[in-house]
Image 1 (cartoon, rainbow, N blue to C red):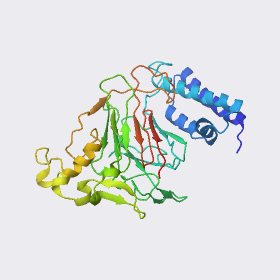
Image 2: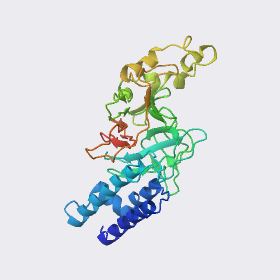
Image 3: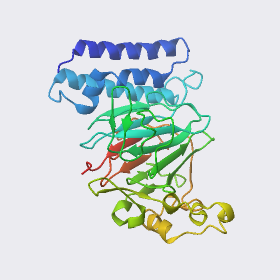
Image 4: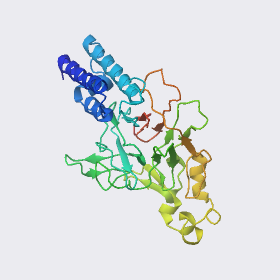
Amino acid sequence: MEFSSRVRHEELLCFLQRILESASNMKTIDLGLELVKLTNNITCRMLMYIRCYEKDDEAEKCRKLVQETFDLAVKMSIREVLGPSNGVHDAAVFKLINRCQVSVWPGILAGAGKPVIDNSGIMLTPNWTATLYPPPGWSGRIWARTGCLFDEFGKGKCNTGDCNGNLQCTVSGVPPTSLAEFTLDSPQDFYDLSLVDGFNVPISIIPISNSSNCARVECVSNVNDNCPAELQVRLSNGRVVACKSACLAFGKPEYCCTEGYNSPQTCKPSSYSQVFKNACPKAYSYAFDDPIHNSDVERRILNVHGTMELYPNDVEYVAGLSSYGTDIEIEKYWEMANLEPEK
C-alpha cells in the first residue's frame, strides 16, 4: 500500500495554517476536532503508529512533522504559545493505543447528562491508535471489551464488557468488567478503579507526576486466576475470562449493600470481596469499600505521549490491561495499551 507524501504534507500544512490563522485573528479553534481530523486520517495514522515506511526518509520527515505539530497544538491548548486570551480551550485528551497482537474494543460511556464522546465506537487493531476529545466537564467510565465481533453496521457481541451488542456504547458494559472511572473539571479531576461489579482484565491508573495528590492506582493482578468457582465467567472452551462480584453472582443484600445493609456500618467486607481486595488493594472491591488513595488531581494538560519533556506538573494516567486481557492504557493523555496478547 502506497501513499503520496505530497498529500501528507499538504494535510499537515493545512492543519498548521488553520492554527496560525486562528492565532493571528484571535479566533477560537477547536483543536480537538482538528487533531481528530488529522490523526484519524489513514495516511497519517499508518505513518505515525505503524511506521510502515521506517526506512523512507520522506515518511520519517512527515512523522516528525506530525509529532512537532501535535506538540505545538498541546502547548497552544494550555496557552503557552498564544496566551490566555486566544480562546483555545484546555481540554483533556484520551489517547487510545492497542499494542497487543489482537484487536481491542474500548468501552466508553459518559455519565448521566454528559455528552457522548464523538467517534468513541472504535476497534483498535494491533499497534493502532485513536485520539478522543472528551468535552469540558466530562465524566464517565472506560473499560476493555474482549473477544468482540461486529458487522459493518456496528452490531455484534463481545465475550466480556458487551454494551447491548453495539460498537459504540450507549449503555454500560455487561458486568463483570474492570472499570476506570473519571470526573473532569470539578474543579479537580477525579479517578478511581472499581471492581464492585467484578473483574475482567487487570487495569491501572498511573499519574506521572511528583505531586503527592496524584496517587498511582493500579490493579495489575489477574483476579481470574484465583476467582472462586461460583464467581467465574467461562467461555465454551472452559477458559475463565471474568470474575463476578458476590453481589452480581448472588444478588443478596449483604453483598450488594442494599435494604438493611445500606450503610458502611452494616455492609461489611465478605470473603468474596476480600478476593478482589487482596489482588487489587487500591481498587473498590464492594460498595462501601475505601481504597485509601481517593485521588483528587488538579486540572493539568499533558505534553504529547512518547516525549521525554513534560511540562511542569503534567500528569499522565495509564491503565494497563494485562495478562489474559486486551490491554488498554488510558492517558490524559490517557493511553490504552496491551501488555500481552490474548491467549
